Length: 352
Image 1 (tube, rainbow, N blue to C red):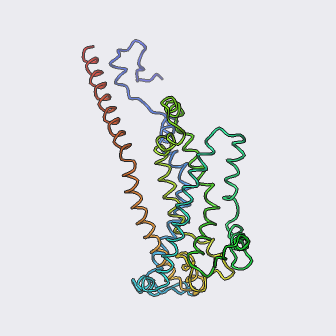
Image 2: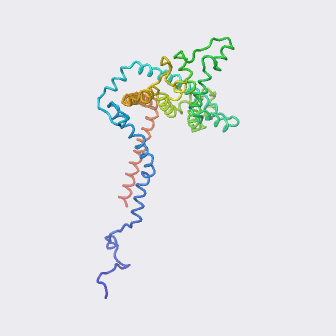
């Protein structure tokens, strides 16, 4: 039996072959799906874990902050903004907020200046570069508890190394634990010791990305090392400096380990000399077992950090304003060139 369907011959007209439906195989379709979906699959584990361990606790804490929460029964009574009003009406909150900003400023500003200086030294042509670059990261890999214990003993009021050295030099001893400002300096010193090397390596990586032709041209023009640093290095570090400032701000406002381990009680001092917001949050939640107030305090701290982040965003825009304008001009030029190329190609096709 022969089939009545006619197969297209090799000598068929091009119009007939063009009208034939083009079949897309499953393998080609799967390749297209893989090209479109595989990037999302590769990054999905992070977002899934973040949703489980990050977004859900944040949302759950927001719900608890509006309740008088009972941890034993795992339930609570809705009381609205009473927990927030209680937190803001407590003098201890404002003391903790003052201490937090004081320690943050005493740690972040010297830390940033020292990190820039060390990174500039490591960017020079010195011997054993790898050794020195690895050495600045050693304090960062140390356990925060170990750092806090070592420095709390160093800054002891009676038998600390620092006071003993001061007395041997004929200077009076400093009340590192009883005086609020002195305790802030001691805690800020711990923070600087641990995080300066981390920020140094970030800034060093940015310095090494600066084209060396700039320095060669400046040397030919007669600019010294100091002039090159302020005219070439610092302007090139603007985006990296902004990143370091923002991360230091977030970490500084969430400081917990150092004030917690500064004495044997971990409550922020007898007169709340070095009590921080996160330390008071811990004491309210796990010391008083009032998780509704602790959740409200956590959200207040989150809003404070968010507000400072917005301020940093405006500062960032003002700092990189010139770079943004140059980028905008270059984008306009590229778009204009692309449009001109398309018009020229259209004219050539029409001429053919």
